[in-house]
Structure formats: C-alpha cells, structure tokens
Image (cartoon, rainbow, N blue to C red):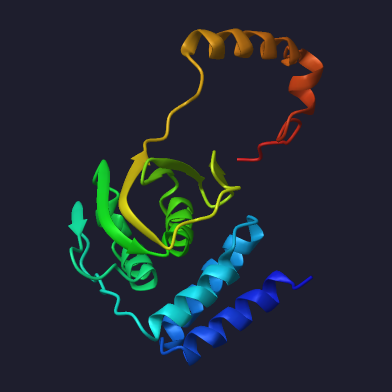
Length: 203
C-alpha cells in the first residue's frame, strides 16, 4: 500500500510534468493525498483528467463570482480550486455560490474540503442533486460515496454553513447544572494553600 506522503509527492511531480507550475503542482499533490486519505479515487480521477487534458480544452476561471457558468468548455477543476482558495475570504461572504459545467468535480471537491478547514466553517455541496457535507477537512459525508463520480458536473451549489450549537439553551443549562456537582467548595484550608497564600508583603 502506498503511503500518503508517496501519493502526494508523485501527484505533485506528475502535475508538473503535465504542464502545471510547481506551485500549482504542490496544491494538486495536497488535494490528491487528501482524497485518497478519505477513501476517494483521487489518483484515478487525476490520471483520467491528465489524459483528457491532452485532447480536450478546459476553461480557466480566475475570478469567481456568486454565479459562474461556462457554456462551452468545462471549467478546469484545478485552476478553479486554486482560485477558490485564493479568493476564499471574499467568497465566504456569499451564502451560496453556483457553478455550471465543471470537469472532474471530485478534484474540485478536495479544494473545497481544504477551504472548510481554512475558514472554520462546514460546507454543503450539491453535485447535480447529490449532496456532500464537508466538515473542516476532517471528514466528508455523503449518501453516494460508493457510486462512481462523474467526469463532468452540470450544476454545483456551494453553501457555507454558519457555526452554531447543535443544542438549545435548556439542554445546555441542564448539563451545566449537573456539572456543578463536581465543583469544590472553597474552604479556609484551600484558601491558605492557594497560589500566593502565605507570602509576606514587605512593602
């Protein structure tokens, strides 16, 4: 079994050989490593993308808006992913972001997962009605991970999820009240043994 370090290094070098800059190749290596770590077919899709890239034209999207559509050639998932990371602080102000016509969306998905960690927010992604939940680059939840990922996605919707508690105030107060039973009541002996106690003030 190949190590994650070996996967990242090989993906980075292959990406450079495929025509990407070393900086771009480094990002691709990180994302491929992450996909394989989560049990997703990163190597398989990257290989397929490189083969298709030799005979197909993909559109590079550098400036991302709230709604983005490519009517002719699909967006390159790598340039799109890198642009997304670069503009993340602006993009997170949108409640939702829309894309249409992205090649190899699973590659783009890896950039989104890393984005979730950077901004500290969970991200919900819809790939042509299939939903994926990205949790701070720690794990990925979906009801279709065992199915084959498409080579092209016609519609993608990205939703940044605001951080909030999963419990209400009554539940919190109830648990906190129970925790108070572990509090130690302050006594004279505790006061004498507290930090700074017993020191002589010579001023």
